[in-house]
Image (cartoon, rainbow, N blue to C red):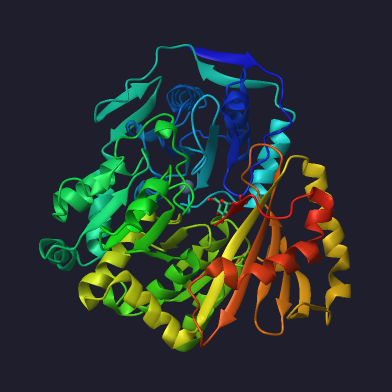
Length: 539
Ligand code: G1P
Ligand code: ZN
């Protein structure tokens, strides 16, 4: 039965870098999810006659929010909604399903790599018909709606059973529950050389994949163990859990600790990889060896010819401004287009839609291609396995050869957690005002050649976005400052450090970047303003 519910607006439903992300307790407030969803429906002129995609990474509160969205969709006159079995859809799969079904939009219930559970985070990503996250112009409109919403439509009805592949009807709306694995796996088989990778495993290549108790577990089990024949035990932490088993499902050197420990032990397998909560991030490790995401993007791009789907040529490549410039050197050598965009996957989408780029990536462990409009963790892992299978080289050899050929960008991200968001905002504002005065100044061994805000003018829709501040030095080093847009409380100041070398490849990245880190604190007045003499998290 249709029910119109009176509600009061919340004032904090502004989407960040990747959708709406909140503490679970915030999202669980009365009508919180409903307000946001109705604000979206209203901003796009209603959903009557439209088809949507729905799923999530299985984290805490997914089950409840899924039912709320299903009932609201039906009550708002949606024609059809396609839901992953048991409510699961990884972020890459959701984009695939959306594109394949030419759906009008989609919801993925995830806070990505943030911890889950009652004390963790919850989130809603909203995608548009192009398969990517909604552009800022639309999210602004949704935010405005959310601040004045007074009622929403829902149904007074029993919950929908999402456990079996089926077609159901909810007050006139078709609900199709799909097996989301098969279709995604078929797509991977079309892109990569599965027989070559199968042979690699048959020849004893040792690989470990850590699904971090999150949504890619079932995909990885099926792809790596069942189809590609890697031995049982290759895939770890493969059962998706509401709280990720207490893990922080972020594949980096800090949070994927057990995998990192294994890969740095004397019995390390040949390759290790991990994905995040919703399956769009990846980390690649060799035996006692770590590949930075910036290098990974550059290496994949340089090796595109080894992959069946790309061997006939690729369009250009793009990276976020904060990502190292490694891939830029490859783009130049390959003579393909090269774009620098603000942080956030949505900025790559127009470039993919207009066939300007095929590959793209971010320093934050995101890599992907135009097969979908989201980053794709398993895709990146298969890409590496395919390169290894064809070249017979190890992860370390491939990376070192890359440095020999192109030089090396020593790279690190320093995160400063600042409890008072005002302190962080002011730090950025004052630094921006000081930028012109920095040019030509020397700090230790580093002389500033240029200092300016990063401004991106989208070549497709003409929109302009300002995100972060960049300091360039005469030796090609760079520092990028920006505030995180995915946190759920306080502020995180991200400082990205890059130093380019062509000859001496020292092993210790932290040491190589130590003086640049000092310079970054000095230029940003970080210690003075926050009391912090070093970053809280280095990735
Ligand atoms: C972070 C990453 C960014 C990524 C986003 C979503 O955003 O830095 O690259 O696109 O998560 O996964 P941030 O918190 O920096 O705004
Ligand atoms: Zn993610």
